[in-house]
Amino acid sequence: MDIDTFYTDHWREIEDERIDRYEQMFVWQEAQAKLLEPSELAPGQKVLDVGAGPGFFASGVAGLVSPGGEVHGVDINQRFVDDANARFADDERLRFHHLTDHRLPFDDATFDRVICKNVLEYVPDISATLAEVWRVLKPGGRIQVLDSDWGCVIVEPWSPETVARFFKAASPAFNEPYVGRRIAGMMVDARFSEVTVRMSPFADQTGRGIPILRNMVSYINTFNTMPQEEVDELMGQVEQALDNNRLLFCLPQFLVTGDKII
Image (cartoon, rainbow, N blue to C red; front, side, top):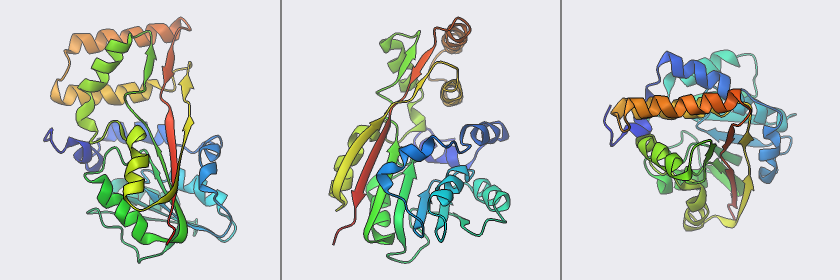
């Protein structure tokens, strides 16, 4: 893969091992409903999930807009779309669509809500994506972005300098690794009103964050951006910290909303 386009390409082409990992990581958990409170989801709403992946998050959203609501998911990975449509074939509230470019395959003013969860850090042009969201939202509709900021990570037992070096080595996977802190301003530029930022901490002591680190390792290994022996040593430290009840992995989520007010 080309290092300059890897941030998108690695979502278009996903190996089986990573598919399996995502299907475990992305299973809907009821606690995620709290993250969506800023969206003010309600029964009967029509919702778009941008970057829907395996579809589990969209299925959870469907429950929050029932009865009468529906959720459409879009993704650039054809297998994600096919698997999600097969997985939820009996749920008429859910439909998934394949994206081949930045344009969303819907008419203007189609949706009451648009959710972008952990996707804007990867898109080629955030401004173009936000313009498309604006287009497909109904007047009075709302976007909610849920995204990370890879400059805000804590991995104990690593030092802050080691964390920064590790995620710098993994940075080919992200077009905008600091989207969490920047998205509010970009939403203002995209004409959204009442832009509001909230934070949700993710603090893990049980190893639930380790698959995220393993994903980073796969990106590092793709381009050999860190010596393999150092990567192995760092991941060994994480595993040992977990065994000794010393692990702490923190990755806060930025919850950013904006309204389409004309």
